[in-house]
Image 1: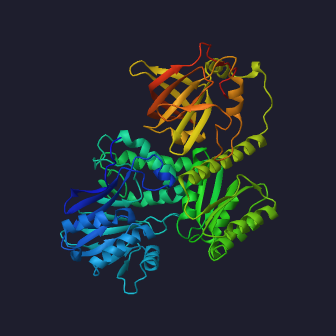
Image 2 (image 1 turned 45 degrees about the vertical axis):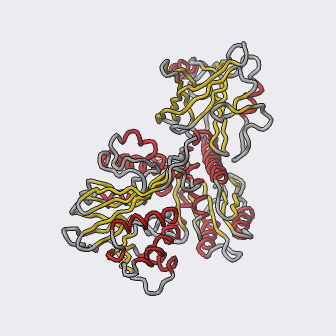
Image 3 (image 1 turned 90 degrees about the vertical axis):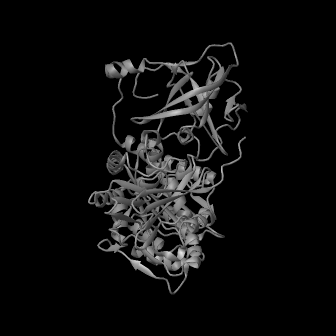
Length: 574
């Protein structure tokens, strides 16, 4: 096994007087769901060295030491006049504190919510802060007249983009990024990273698509030729198609016929992290999310979201044995607004007790609401396993809403003769009955499938159609491993029954099933007819499914029996 690549800072000029400092890690940086593809990430910071020097978006605590070391190789920190912040959080605050020791003269430039957060994090009474609201400019000299574009959303109410008309560079912070590490700085050959960009959007932006759309409207007013992103490759060659994709993805979220109001507050970021995982689970199941940060939302916004939604989920930290005041206010609004037919969910994080979670859960129970998942309680920071559980809980919640809506839509039973001829014809396509298994770290997944076909001879490869709301879908991205366990006719019913049953979030899919580890680390079913080990090479979005193309790396026939086959009469269901 090769030793891990050490973290470093990659430095490159990107425009006149403008340099990017990319703090890089090839390992998964955090357990948040947005990092789950495990392709590393970059924290991109920018230096504009005009008559006055501005530093944009220093990285978080993970890179503080190596970033400041590299920065000092380039300039004397005492020459920095401005530090412009696209968002403020405690993680970035660690670097800012260290930077202040080297450069006490710096003046911070941020939005008003950012200034409030900055004062709380740095706890320094003599901070120099310039608050921008969108109509100001900052003249650095040599033609660099910076403009500011507030782009607030529930997760980052202080979000701020910065535009330099002289270089036509838009510093986008969280927008248009991707968690992907490599030597390539610009996005030549950008189609190869489209999957990572879409995943980043689905995790980070989809829960507040309405606010992202407003940000896009503002961004289109400037003539940007380069998006200087906060993570991943900078966007030059795909600027127009990526912007269009963001529009399309936002529209898809807004036009979902079922929506969930996701209400939360997050004292230290832990509850917000769980909220993000739940939102990801909901959206992957084809249900829209209206994410609302109760710390900044007004009562009417909360009331409107709850009224429009088919279900609601509320999350809270516990502070001093109580729920924050904003959560208590939101709870009152929900109880007075939401009809009892709406589905409810509760989650939260705590340090010692968790009274806030119990309060919300009991209030909803007493009011007669039904729950879409078991209440999620997270002590201290959520783990990778916890976040996977939360994602699956979100998917279960969405599926319950879809099932309820379907049951309300009366549908008369139809005979085979009444089924459309096209559907009958599609139903005559048959496939081998298989169990797909996957493993990623401590996470495992499995599903019954028969939409499987050999796709290539050289290299040997196959395709699998995976529904977007399947739990295993999140374990089948490019580069991940899986096993196709082919079932044997006459011995397949027991395994079919086991893997067809509904599993609770986080439940072990392999309990009571004989397995052994394959060479790629994924489970092989001992009672399978044969198996093939595969690596995901590509994915294609196809309506309500993902089409996974896997290259076969190993395989073996375990029995001389016959492959079990599934016969259908209609192409409208499995």
